[in-house]
Length: 456
Image (tube, rainbow, N blue to C red; front, side, top):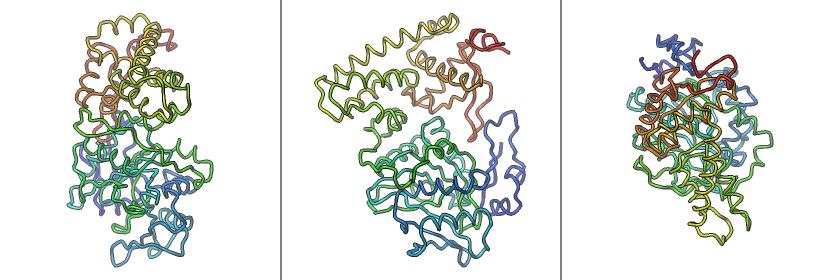
């Protein structure tokens, strides 16, 4: 399947014609394989005006009313400048009017939030895959490789074509240090095998020590260099927008928000532990009071048991001890011994919940990684049923991160579970578009009314 033509000329033609990119280029993917729409959409087809303003205001990072950049088009190219008179709210509103074509061509403008605030924190990171050398195919491939890597993470993600390349936005619910964002994004770049350098891949924020860092044009904004709009190809912003009910300026800035200690793993790069540790588990189960260690550990083990493999859980538990905010009488070894006992107890309970078919299959698996994979995928299946669906995605890289193995290793374990009759593929992986989807084959008839053991 060919790549969609995303040169600046094609983007301008698409914007003016108002047609889907696939129709303009003859590359519409078959409906039976497409799990996500691959039509790039302008921001006004993705968000309402108020939703876009709330999102962009959040990306402003709590900076002052005049601490941002705007852009106009002069003499055929973008002209970026700081305004001392226009306020942030007014600039965001003008940028939206440009998106909706509600201003004259010579009045078009765009809004560029800074990638950090003076406290050295940011709510977001962005990978910028450029095609300055004209290699748009490479830029698109890298962008969707990174999206695939982050699929099923707890970050809010936006992937967009920019007219000169691609942006992949990673948005957190809270502030995190610039240094940790930089390490995280460089870890993602390493995982998809791309060198961070201008013209190929850049990361924002970058730990340069600047007061505000560099800016990135807001999602879906107008590109003054190409005179075209960024096109949104995938986003999951709805949960974040629902949570942004209070005034953005009142969101607490905390110097304690940061990624966990980094460990060298099989990707050969210093990258974070499983992302959910930093995006919720660390704060939810942090030991902050005396005599709370055991209870917090118990809650954490219960949370991660269905989501990661044992080896990854061990690393998380070690980080849990290091993150304690109060002195503890128990040693780290004692902490680990308690974890092992809790894990074994939950494992015994979980085994008792398996139906006869599941238990028979589980007992015949040959490795700990396969058994961990079985447990994790079964939790995917239970979540899918709760959501009213039978199949679910298993993104290879995300699955591998949960198990603490290489991406190839994650794919191999997934294939082993297919061969063992645990799951079957319902939809193939669509390159740079969607993860393959699977169906659990070990369901008893009573679990899904009208169905038996995964067969239609």
